[in-house]
Length: 338
Image 1 (cartoon, helix red, strand yellow):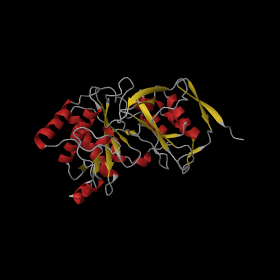
Image 2 (cartoon, helix red, strand yellow):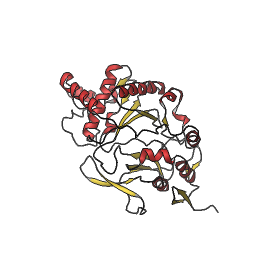
Image 3 (cartoon, one colour):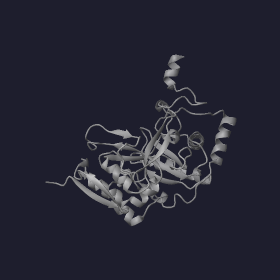
Image 4 (tube, helix red, strand yellow):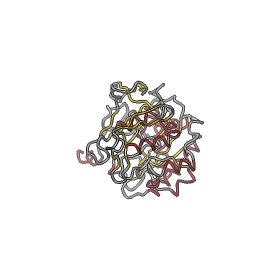
């Protein structure tokens, strides 16, 4: 009879994994234990992405093909005494405690909880109201391909560098790319989102055939949407090295800029990434070395408002109505109402 539990150790902490032979990714046969071993193999880079950050878990109790899944934002009451939490404020104004990674073993606990995706906030537990990471989510729309997303990321890199930032890039695990830059934790979520909107508008001005900032899908066309709302409070991207809920057990993978034109998202899976890390190291090593200021982007936002009459853009539908936000009415419906 197969063992019903094993104990795995990372950084001196032993973590129980029940049902280690349970298949999490049926299409490729990856088990719960193999997933735990993957996270041990990438622990250094994973901790660089997650350390000190509140985190939501995308949990699949029956595995990827096992029916229901759900996002767990609030930390459960039955936490091991070594798993830490951080208090966060949600858009509703209510507070809650989310699991916070302070050591690699916390991620193994998440595996035990059947989490297939790890979604950290862009803040640290010491100050959960001021992001320390600027996130640019490049989301290709129907009709665009990964090569165009790579081109968009390269444009984003050039503009961020021009603004004095040090950008890093990773695959999303899907068709998109995430461009990240560490920033000083001096600005609120509202200010940081405003900076990303200004950044996205400048990209759109420079390359209107490539970029769109339209929140409404009917207006985007076959372009790359810069999802500025991923910088809003309680909106999260998958962490670097997090697995994704896709059949081939793909990973959100950091890559170096010179490598980017030659990669595809399918290159990076639970079974390929540990060997790549052993060979090449973590492409995001050094991401914490040079936090940048948002002053130039916020000045750009002020010019947009003053000289071009460009104010805020719509928030996600679950948010309360925000000050200065335009109406959340789909353009075709608004025209129909007129």
